[in-house]
Image 1 (cartoon, rainbow, N blue to C red):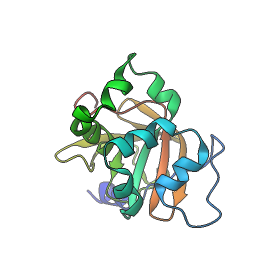
Image 2: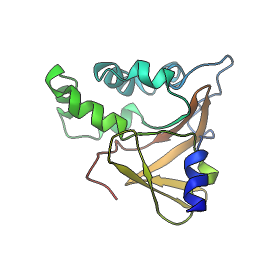
Image 3: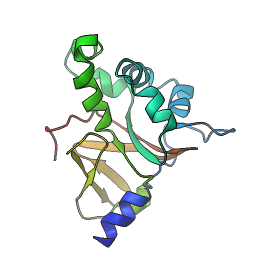
Image 4: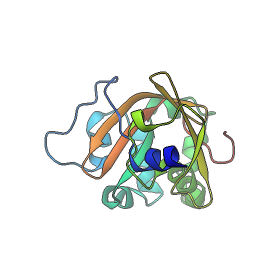
Length: 165
């Protein structure tokens, strides 16, 4: 319980993909947008009506799939999710990528732990194996990217609620 609490209170990303810490204070949306690697995620957050929420929430941890991660989804999935009639489903998927606390990679326990996400009634499975952090079936490829309202962990797959653990 103590490990889980410590984990929930502290996760952020280091550098692997060339993401630099912002020179001036930027929120998680601004940091992600400045890299050019999260165009699909930013477009999805805007379509779901979450971009402003993520920019203003604090503290948060975002498991951010890259454009390449979105490209791994079955053909047509992203296009379908971006349609207005699928806004609720898109919002649930994106909320599943966000923790309502700042959690650093080094605080992730070596034992699988389930952590509550912003998607109501959903938890994500996190575990650290050596220096690598895994989230559900995804791997953190860059950890502890700092923003003024939290931290971003870059992941190699899009997380899907109900299809993991």
